[in-house]
Image (cartoon, rainbow, N blue to C red; front, top):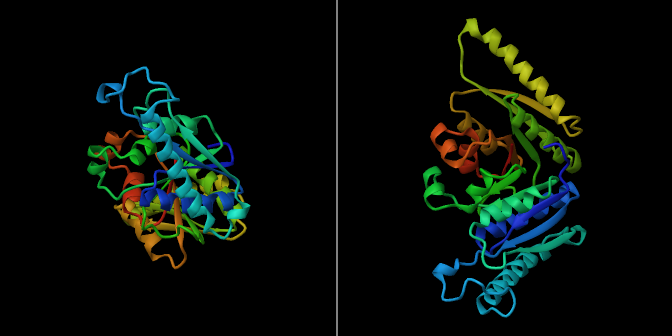
Length: 297
């Protein structure tokens, strides 16, 4: 991502996970000095599954009026949550409702398309704690958005830690393009919110013959990441983790932190089935971490 984040988009639907997303999205907007967008998508049923004609009009249609009422309720619920936060008066908030003249067949596609029109935006989404296969079988909207959007997306669960307070950023890196893009996002947040950054590089254990090469690779990755991060006034730490279970090692670092952390990491851009079959590290971290996880392509 080349553009600094100026907009934080939070889809809302009155679910517990969505409410958690509102709280954390508001915090990120406050820390980044960004505008907050509360977004609701109207997933009307196709005419084939409805008693109503396919040429229904957006006005004067009872079903559409009911969905508009649900949208208003979802946005009002989000506004009530915002009203309880100490920095509400400093936030710039917009309410946005997306719907077509007839129906939106895929809410995730509407969310992704809206975010794509804002190259300076990031998404914040609450998600249910489903297993990797469960996300596919139960058609998780959050999972579909994660694997489709090119905007940074933060995923958290209703019981996630660090919803209202962040004190440290954990930045897993491997020197790849997407991990360096994640470093740029982490650098912006670290500077605007005065946060320290822990850079994490995981590699499997090696023998003495390969250790020298491993050390060279570690320093190369750290150097690339430092350059992408930029200046971090609150402090930068570098940690080389020896483990063949990269996702577990990253999550353990988050759990061991004495300060509420967030994880910001790159994502290779795999589709949901590819990520599941190939063992995507970012997807595993997103599923297991108890803190918010931001994924960047």
